[in-house]
Structures are given as structure tokens and as C-alpha cells.
Image 1: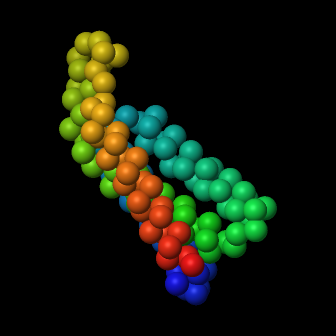
Image 2 (image 1 turned 135 degrees about the vertical axis):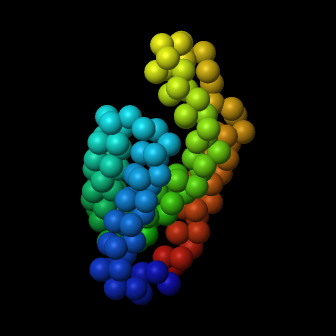
Amino acid sequence: MLTSVPVAWLWLLAAASTALSSCLLGSWIPLRKFRIAYPLTMVTGGVLLIVVCRVSGFGLSEALVMYSSAHIGLTLGMLPQRKWFKEVLERWRRGERTDHIEVPRRHLAFLVVTVVAVLLVGFALTR
């Protein structure tokens, strides 16, 4: 279904999902290094995903849909961890130890389930 959409729209979807993910996660983790490194890492990973998909026989449209789906799933999956990020950052800025603070398992489970579910929906929409 999404593979019948012109590729220009899929590039726009990929750019919008990257920008939205970068802005939201950058506001939840307000560190300058993170705000610079996260988008660069995600775009590099996207380029590698496109290369691997092309080598494996998948088209560009399938790769772009999966890239966008991964960003959407990651952003939605990180929603419960916003307060946790801010708490750890505040403690870190005050000079307190933060290595003993662990992410709640339910947050990690939600992240994994959300990313996998959105990727499966993206995969279903490409067929």
C-alpha cells in the first residue's frame, strides 16, 4: 500500500519522522552533544538500512517506510521515560551519582513492544 505512494512522499515521511524524533528526544534529553549526535547517528543508520535493503532485494520505498516506522516507534516507546530522563539529568547536573538509577523494566518492555509493533505495521503497509 505505501509502496504505491511516490518515493518523494516517502522521503518526506522519513525526514519528518527524523525531525520529530530528534526534536522530541532532544527536549527530553537536553544535552548539546545528544542533540547533535542523535540525528547524525539516525541518518547514518538510515543510509546503512537503505544500502542493506537494496543489497537484500528490497526496494527504496520499503526501506524508507521501515526507517520512518522505526523512528515513530522509538519516539512513542520513549514517552514513558521522559520524566526518568529529566530526573537523571537533574541529579547529574547537581553532581549526584546517577549510575545506580535504573530504567524501570516496564518502560523497557513498552519501548520494545512499541517499536516492534510499529515496525510490523510498517511492514504490513508495504505489502
